[in-house]
Image (cartoon, rainbow, N blue to C red; front, side):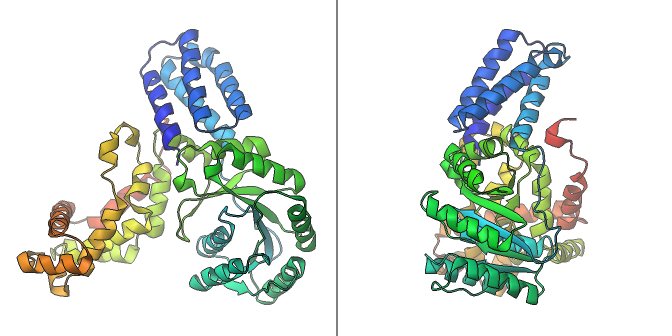
Length: 455
């Protein structure tokens, strides 16, 4: 997400950071580059104009011209304005109401609405410890009802059945009653999508809204449609009051125009972003963290949260004790680390959140390949338990057998074993701490990191 915008803005900001003096002409030239970067990112024109005007007004005052470090001061103004445009801070779902709290989920066809409903249910169940029920009112697409049922069963989420022969309003009312009887904390109602906002769609959603009086009304929108996403959300909000927006498919959006336009055009907060296809790939939207990532400062807080959420603490403790005893780090341990890395979104996701990654050449970044991680797991799975515990026995004929079983080549086996050896040496250096100590170091960062990298 934001790759193109980040590259353009970080180049501009890098020129500024070391400046000991900034003239008015220098500021105007820098803002021209920022303006081009925003327009290329498909940010809506009114938002770009407002953004540049606000930054210029602050930059041409004493805040920059009179600063001891004018370059740094201007970078901070751009950062602060990005945060303001996106909404200052994360606005969580308001669940402070008599249960079941009803959340109505709307969106156009193809925006990822049904999957997002399941993702949100999983998030609320795991992170907020809520008992959640889901229901589909999409009677026009039978596959949508079946899809939501399958996803709900997969994650042990309560599912209220519905039929295409029923009316959406009746389904919604029955679901509210069922959620009340089953003592659910939250009821998520997935509604029908359309190819575009039309009168029939709005009449139906208004009737649903009136029937169940939702506490939250969320609009799911595809971020890859750029400023059109913001315009669609704006049109929908004018017809039916929204309480928030969920941006989907942000992992495939290199521009970021939707994220920078939605709040300004609709006045409604982005509450969550979909960051991948898996059901745990839904994250609260933090404007300050996103602004830092856009300017190449990384997002260490989110990375720490990912580690705390996805790394199995018991496995980490067990590995730490094992290394402390001098039992060694074997291929089963290596596989466990690779799988936990995949659970965090893979290496690519981690790299995006590390500060200074914009300075690394593209050809080096391209080597961070999550498919390679999957191949390494497959290679280890094709080994015998003895081979995983005693890698030194893996020689010629064994390598051929493993390659055949994992659909890889002997060269891939050699490369994986080399990477394992490097990891093994690193674990020996950790000695008494292992993964536990590394996690403690990361955990200690939380709460001590200056927001956006500014002290």
